[in-house]
Image (cartoon, rainbow over all chains, first blue to last red; front, side):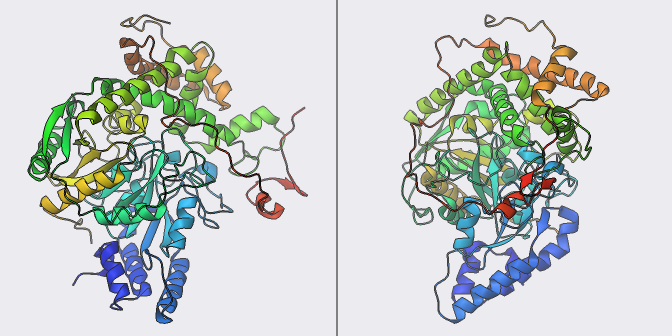
Length: 488
Length: 103
């Protein structure tokens, strides 16, 4: 028998609407699943089972009284632990924020609650979203539900793993250089990084603000569209959000894509791409060839330089953003009472931040320091212009661009964590999109030797509707060997 | 500014890493300094890749959306109550955050 936790948000919504299931039953099913597998997967940092049950009972009561409910009524949603949930510990996977309890909700969380989504807990991630494997967490790593010896991808690894194995129906991640798409790819689910400015970052703990966006993670493209519809839109509290009105991303999913021209980006299959990835994604391209106007190769030469440019910009912005952690108003503070200002500050940050965060903040400070600013930071911003121009050129010929999400299948826990640079290299296919501020979705494309491989579909600014449509048609046409991990 | 294709010959020194750590206000242990210098040097070797393209006359992109000033009405909003604002601080005295000695 299919359990409720195995269903998609759309299926659950139909069951609840028709009275065949209650919100409480749906929440209980997910909680039971959490009790069964969380010990092995470690997707969560903080759980609020009682709060979730209470909210479910309120929704059931409203349904009984024939009062209207929101579009996420009874749907269990997990939130990456870098988004503020009022009254619930929000740690960023850092010792620095281990006991931080936000006094307010992030805009995305507020919108999920308003749509009657049930926030079940906060998911594990790389500390301050700096990582590609969810191994850089103060609370220990998350494991890939498809193979518990492997990483789930990062930095939103907890969110992706939770959705993949039924510990949540939907989840939110944040994507600064691939942190939604990478774990979606590694866990064989759907993850979308919206156009910069589509989703409010108010209440998202900042890492690199010119690059990051909050995005939905789900089992299907349709569910992804549902959650995007809930969270997208202008927010007065984030003045970088675009004012484009309200859209229902689900309503256009089934429109035909026969006229869509697909560009296959040569550089995304570059040197270092695993042959299993190339094979699997090229099979996906064959499927797209059948269902669209056609696929053609295109070269974006500047992508070769996007990884160093991305890291220089991200680290520089991080060094500035993370300067706020002084131990005064919130967060960890070195307890030594006798110390003076500078010593307290430096000790607080030495002990409060993990090794990767310290490394990036120090290198970022270096790149911004006198004598190096033009040499590194400004050059990286110039490369960013070239990347944007290359994408603009490509989009004059094509409607969407495709390639692998990740250059390799999920790797073993511990395999790459000791060499920071080797781990950075894994982001080579995801960072160009962040530099250019474009929307991109990672959708399951098949398996190589039992390991999930994702395909990335990139669109023009604010063309979420189109990439969701292409991903949806692809999902319906491609036959995957399995849809949920064999985890008991 | 170095010319394109110029090889990166100068290594980053421990002194430079120490200086960056001072700017970042992060204390470093002695053994950490050596390790970090090696790691950052390798990264800079890799980042050197962007020296290989001609960037003269290419304007920098600070932000992907062309932002002009965004205004809103200056209407008063409710602020955090004092107790809530202080609730996450590790040291509080009366109605104040307690800071370390400055002078």
